[in-house]
Length: 77
Image 1: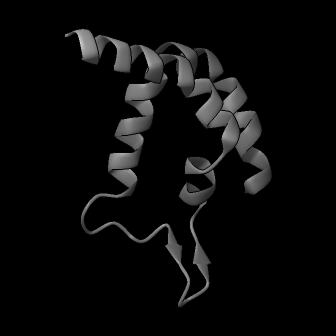
Image 2: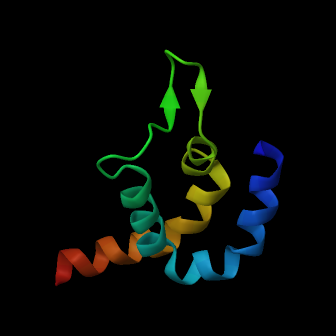
């Protein structure tokens, strides 16, 4: 599963470059919502695929332009 994340992120890269910050924030809210299973459960030795998606550097890099734009607009707004 970990090997499929980079191709999936590259396929979604045009969308992420345009609207990456809101999509990433909404995804993080979904993954970390109340009642959701933990993405990293050390006691049981369980690691969710969401952990690899959230911590993947390519996803962070593609979302950076819109996150910077959101911060800029937030300061001025």
